[in-house]
Image 1 (tube, helix red, strand yellow):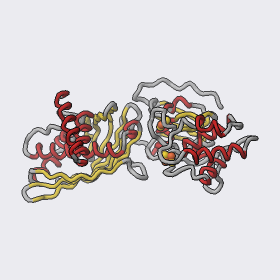
Image 2: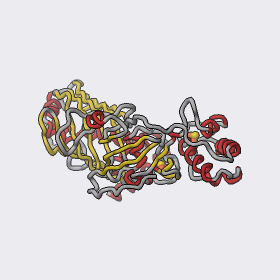
Image 3: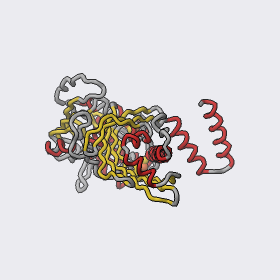
Image 4: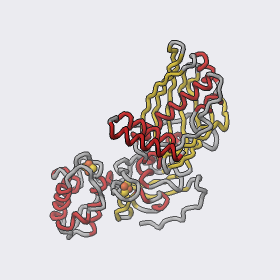
Length: 414
Ligand code: FES
Ligand code: FES
């Protein structure tokens, strides 16, 4: 282990330089100080084998080795491991040269969905590395720090016991360590692990000069949303709202336009509160297409906690008799605490926000002040509305009773 450097002090919304090696590759990053190691590994370095479950140290899914010791990557800020050597499950073996633990898990059917498997593999590695004489009867307790929701634990214990019995003299080292190119899913200022020009091109500058373009991450978005709303206003009236960006932003729940940068580039803020998670994104939006009946928007925002949201949104307004059908199609990429929010619930919340947006556009098209900017999307309002929607969909007498009770309780709280 090399000596950790003194990590510089910075404001909570600033960035710090961090250096460490991961699976034998030296990495140098500039990241927000509150960004967790799990998020950096997955989103900035593309090492998605480290899974995230609970994000509070309970499930063990995110277990990696930090200087040879099993550690929860969700409980560490990346800046805390400056100067360390990290090993993730990607370093354990190669597809054509698996580590004995990986082979054994396969042979003993020690996995079903595989979500817990990286955590079990890294925890087992740490256990057998430190306690090669561990006995079968102790394995259940020794591995109890990792939770599996679908495999019988017996198979996992069989797999680990098999390797323990075969390697009492010493467990083979991880087999896939070495210098390689790491490419993350989201833009970051990074050197060393990949080509600097790529990193520089990918880094979107929020507070400084406007970038040439907003680059969305490759791969599957965190969520996709497709919402169609029916507005009472005519397509001509909706078109007038679409043409006025300042008015349009006032229709977006929690959004605020702070700067017009020209050439359809805008700087702004968006506040979102999801349960205990309260986020304030500062970001940029670029309108690639801006016509009275359609828009194509790329947006990116950073939160002080290290969270990042990027989105590609397309709006299409179509005349529907005397009214208008407004379709919103969005691909959203989330990094950080907000990404830990359940995907399906986050999708429901986003859907609800688009519906609120459509309602506000309808109001603005009728000449009223849109109500969206008066009330940012509060956790309470959106989340509860979402839960009520879900309960409505489930139906049934008991659920209807529970729903009434919940609605009564909510109206008392309001
Ligand atoms: S995600 Fe880290 S312990 Fe659950
Ligand atoms: S194999 Fe599915 S959670 Fe363990």
